[in-house]
Length: 78
Image (cartoon, rainbow, N blue to C red; front, side):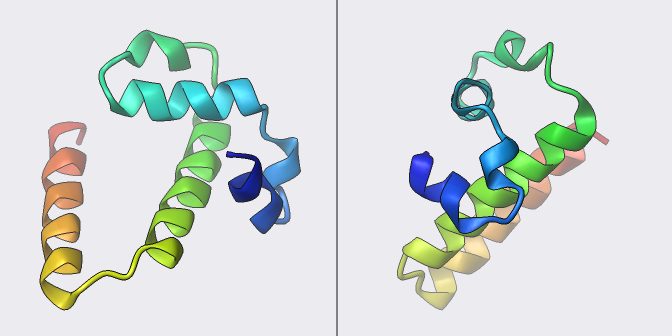
């Protein structure tokens, strides 16, 4: 998490505890982000997603599947 925060200009503004809460919320503990405002949450999500996309050696098939899953998840919240 500290590495992710260092990679982004505004990353140092993110609380490490809040970032952990965002990740844990994505894994099934949504109440951990109740106190995070929408703009901050969105910025943290972009930082984490950017790190995932940069660090992993995605094959084209894996990336397409990842995008498909993200689209399905986003559709549930729209």
